[in-house]
Amino acid sequence: MKVAVIIPAAGLGTRMSRTQAERPASSRKQFLLLEGVPILIHTLRKFDACREVNEIVVAVRADDLESVARSVAEQSFSKPVRCVQGGDTRQESVWHGLQALAPDTELVAVHDAVRPFIDGETITKVIAEAAETGAAIVGVVPVDTVKQVHRNKIRATIPRDRLVLAQTPQVFRFELLKEAFERAAADSFTGTDEASLVERLETVEVSVVAGSDRNIKITKPTDLELAQLFLTQERSAAERVAEPAP
Image (cartoon, rainbow, N blue to C red; front, side, top):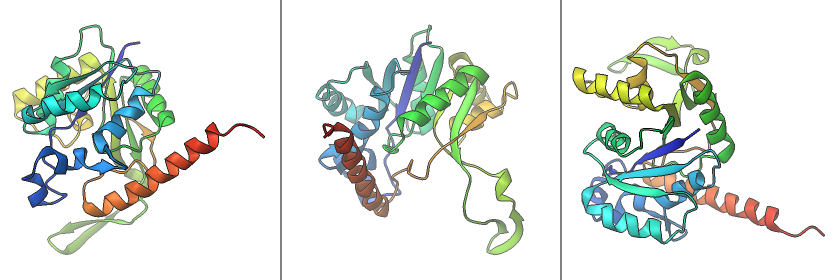
């Protein structure tokens, strides 16, 4: 089964700070450094290491195409990694990525550029689920009580057992995802994730594979501190595995 991964990485990262969004690419969140390596590269490494993945397409801003392609080339990835021009929105960037895929692609996984701590086991599970059902995402059940409000007044408490916080990867049959994007374009609909577009088709039910609280999306300065901790823990675990047996 041919599986392609699309990484939309054209965002300005305005939640990190307005001033950073106006700075060069090296100051935007997907290009910020963790132990000297851009967050985007850390993310790409996870999918390059996944045996189910055949190729990776990164959608970036036109101004970043050359620099990102150079960074990718320096990594010597085992899987083909291509850079294409993204759009002004996530939805446009993913659509551009879809246009770059070969017709024989069977499954497409979309993953946030700034979720570098997705683990290989979860990637494998969500791909397997999508291969069986046609559509699957990674998600976690919220631990906090969720309130529905109007302005600053509570209107209802929503049962947590009926809620899930959507993460990525989100994986779909190639033709299904293309159809969802085409329908959204025809209806001038903009979704917050790919699943919301597929849900509108009402042809398949989107499955949820259990994710992890470690699969954080780095969107604000405080996330960088947690990311550094997670990276240190990953490095320590890898070193323990690599140690020769006594």
